[in-house]
Length: 441
Image 1 (cartoon, rainbow, N blue to C red):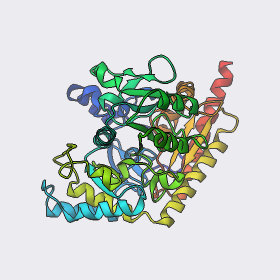
Image 2 (image 1 turned 30 degrees about the horizontal axis):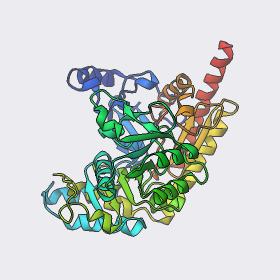
Image 3 (image 1 turned 120 degrees about the horizontal axis):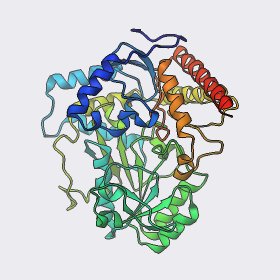
């Protein structure tokens, strides 16, 4: 099938995808360049993509899917948006990279600073991981302290000190969660449960943190927003203890609102980590904040950070074009699309036990009977049921995140017809799961 079937079950012919995966296993670790792409958690092999157009992607076997991954967030306007594409082509025609300043970098920094009230100055990187590393280094330099408070279940890139898991107790020094991470690197990280005010107060009292690091709207254990008042408590505890508040907006930045989650929640960070939308689908990240903090970086200050491709012309052009298309009308429309999708998925589930959580441009369907408020409750979801549901959606032309612990990323390119296909497909698969569950009883 070479075009997206409208309300018709797709027969997923995996021939070329399977061939490519077999070839990839010989030359790429696990056959992929990022673990979640392996699709192991949903019990299948990877789908190799050939091209995308609008809200759809098409695999190498010609099957079409309504795409709710959208490269894990950058493609808020969908695939191959004409204005973003034109900006990239124009930039590429002038040269791929220079290792020298360009006017585009200044324009992008001005655009970001004009949107995010807590950001006066910016330093671009090539990834969110690099931006997080820089923010943590800045916080330590500014405060003269080493400890970083991080929340269990949050992901801030594959930084050694942040690839950590909790030791015993509610507020404790962390231990490595990955082989190859030195114990000493993880020891400077203090882990507390998300949404646990008591644990946060305990941690900030017992330790002298350089920073409290949090996702403004956590979306790396599925979408798990803060309880009322919790983000405000982050700001209060940072101020009370002399720590900096670092908000990770790699996912939420310029997706949930014009000024990111800080705009939506009404809380300003000292330092903000950005990525995804800021690069419009090309590799880009940034850290931003008040001028006096940012000027600790070289060449003004002594905190060292550098990157050969930081602020490269192609990513800057894509990011700037993406942001300029995101006006108030665009955000209002994205919120409407997300709410329609969320409400439709709740109806599609019927009495099947799921929790549908959403913020503008973000959504998660948790296979849980009770609300999910932290990593522990996310891990208690029915992962097998989610995997079965995912496979059923793929077979019907809907590309959902291949993990219970990842968010959906609806785009502005979605049409009413594509939303209807998604909801009809979801309802069909929910009904299949319901019948299977009744038979199992």
